Structures are given as C-alpha cells and as structure tokens.
Image (cartoon, rainbow, N blue to C red):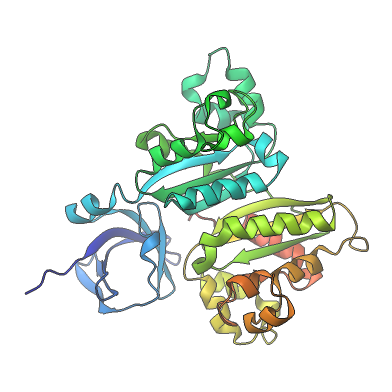
Length: 388
C-alpha cells in the first residue's frame, strides 16, 4: 500500500455565539486535494475526508488563516512531527518593514520590495500600513533603548506611516535580509540590494528585516496589533479590494496603480493598505448596496471569504469636482467582466488578471456615497488579519 502524504495542523475556530475558540485538527492530503477535520474537545470526526479543490495550501503556516465552508480557521501549530519537519523551514516567517521615509518617497518602493520578495519565493501573509507611537517603537526596538543612535532611530520610525509585511517562505529570515542588504546602504551591492537603491544612511536605510526566527515572532506580534492607517473621514477617497487568489499580484497591481494616479494628479495619494479576513456576513453587510447590481452577487462575495484579502485606499484633499477618486479607481480596475475589459480597457487590472465575472481580481467602490463606508469598514471596523 502506498504511503499517503498528510499535513496536519492545530487550528482554532472562533465561535462568536459562545465567545470562545474551539480547537480542531485540520489535515490536508496534497495528492488527492482532500481535507478532513477532527474536533479536539469532543474527540470526534468533525468533517469526513472529502475533496476541497478551493483549499489554498500556500496559506497553511503557523499564524495563517484558511477558510473551510465559510469557517475561518486560525493555524496555531503543526499537529505532528512530520508536518513540522516538512514545513517549518519551508514556511518560515519574517517581519519586513518599509520605513516611513521610503513610504513617503513613493509607494513604488513598497511594490519593489514585494516583487523582490516574490522573486525569492517569499509570499505575503499579511501587509498593513501603520503608524508607530513612542510606546510601539520602544517595544519594537527594546534592545536599542539607551544607545546613542536610538533617539534618531525612534524619530525616523515615528515620522509617518510605515508598511509592515509578514513574509512566508523557505528560510525567510535570511532570504529577506539578503534582499535588503547590510544595514549601511553604502556597503550594499547596487545590483543586488534594495537598500542600495532606496537607503539614505544607517538610520534611514529604507527597510527592516528580522534578525532571527525568535525576533520575527516577537516583532510580528507587535506590528500586527497596530491599527491600520487610512484617510478615515476623507470626503474624496475610494477602496480597492484584491480577491484572495490574486493577492500574490499585489506588487504589480501597486506599480500599475501608482503610475496611474501619478498621471492623473500629484495630489492623489495611496493612504492605506490592510490585509483583511472577512466572513460571509461581513461581506454581505458591506456589499449590501450592490445586491441586484453585481451579477451573481452571492457567488461573487463568497470569493472574498475564501482567505485573506488586501484592501488598498487612495484619496485626495482636492474636491470631487476636480478629481473624482471613485471614478478614477473604477477606470483603473476596468469593466466588471474581464472578457469585456480585455476589449475596452486592455491595460486595466481586470483585463490583465481577472478570469471571469466572479474571479475578476478586484472589487472597487462603485458609488461615491459608499466610499467613506468602505474605508471605515476595511480599515477600522473589520476584524483584520492578526486579530479575532
């Protein structure tokens, strides 16, 4: 009899009615793309072994979230030695940060960092634009408190929004540090290291990378407790939500978006990025206005509940009579149906990445009166990745 490969994970499902986490063991069989679940508390089979083609094994790492039949399962550990030995190095996590001075220079730097990481087989698990307070900086850089350079370091980190990213992949800690290069940009290889391109000096060196797996765990625990920044209350903004199966394209989508808005006006800014894990109920609430407008509405919103989505906000201080942000982002996304987008707007996101009307890569705010609601929902109200 042939050995069957099985990866098993300790997972938690948050039961909102009982207000408690319920533990399960989730197993995945890659050869047949089957799954099963075992309920730990009752010691009973919860889900018999069955085909589940939608299962995304790439999200199966400690700290990740997978969705099975609309249940969001938080992976908290490997359930056996085989899974641990097979995946612990392959799915290592690290904390990557694009520092405020680099974010302020251009969001293209965020995109370049993401694309460079992807080229080294590192995937985004979570991404968020945040602002560090003094307490946050002290917690994050606790080992540097009291050193001569710390005041300048703290001032730089608190100067504006930073972009924090959890990267997952083979030997992620060392791989990301090799991508960004030495702490001193002057010692970096211009052909190889990101700090050579974007770093200014030892303090403003554009990027942070965890020094060890232990540091990564501690740092990720800090940065993803920070609230995402966004232009909450802005009267001229819009939100784009990337579907889970397309989140690996976020770097390229960001490049296209930044180039697009720069052509329209220098007064349009990328004001927020946040990884969200919505439930079907969350999606039905925030997209209620589109029921009867979006074809196959129920199927469409279900796609966004299959895993982590990435919300991106753009905004401007100029009035909508001068720059209509909602219309601008709609144009960037392209027609709802990718086949139509291919003919009418071949450079649009949906034409380039979408496959059909359900899997069309992105949802964008379609109604100006919904813009503030969407920003508030995806960047403040919505339980985000890293939070219950």
